[in-house]
Image (tube, rainbow, N blue to C red; front, side, top):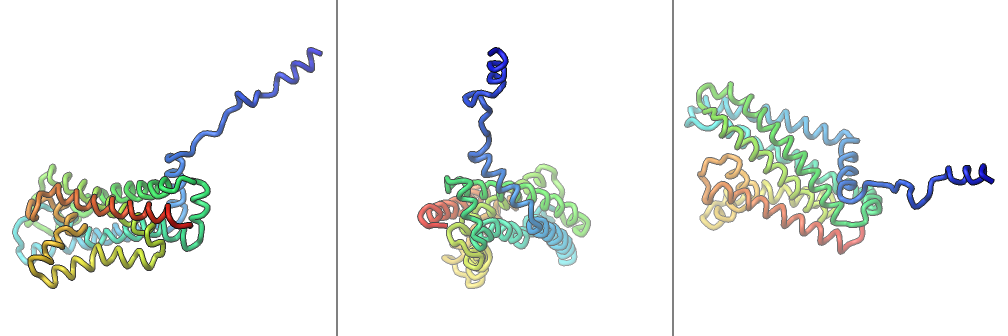
Length: 268
């Protein structure tokens, strides 16, 4: 009898068994992080961004010296390079969403994480982290590359450099969040890329090209223009540099809200 009791007592009580842990937003973010780095696309995109940063900043410094431009902060080269490098983060953020819709794997993601806005938040945070870290890295590399070609046509102030490099990281993070929101709202790569290119690059170019006080004022409130004032931090914009950050943030928030609305209203 005692042997039977002993044998029975060795089995774990279901009420005290260890329950599975994880899940929630942390689990959703971890899942997105794993999915991102399990394919080659992000590595290729980020490598392209690094190469473009190096080439652009080298020529920026060289042209400033050749054309005898006024002396400027060396970080301006990195801030200016974002006009091209930002598309690395836009495309990367877009594909984390549209690729899942194209393959219908988004249904699996929503089964794993039934709280729909949590999926979008996880993707937004993921791209914000990647954008900030890589934006800071690109900014620092750009400063290092541009300093030589400038040859005395730029100033190096450590606090100014740090401020500009961090601002580049923040802008790249917000652009990633903006792209995620637009991608969830439109769901297709063609539609998302068209809108992103229009809002970020094409429309500002048209507004500046057409000119006029009204169009130029509208351009000042586009994300790329406002972000440019924020990143350079030279105080030459129509509003304080910090307002440029708030405008870019507003674009990201509006896009995120639009993405959440569509995600909740439409089936995957």
